[in-house]
Length: 85
Image (tube, rainbow, N blue to C red; front, side, top):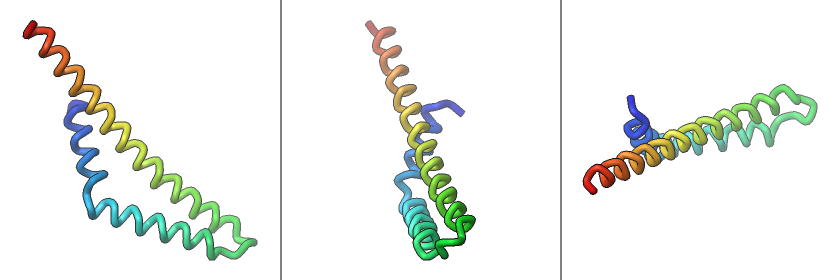
């Protein structure tokens, strides 16, 4: 699959209401687990923190795919204009 198609698919995922709702719910849940954890329970807080990091990593990776798709699309358009000149 080329970068342009992957970029469009990644954008669709990021913009999908179901994805946003699920991501927000997970983020709230992990923050609440961290906030309400026993101060002595560092393992639970670490797990909640790592889970939040995974959500951020996933979102970041999707944005990278979107950006790569935009670059690919721009490169193709530029190449087409050069051939037409």
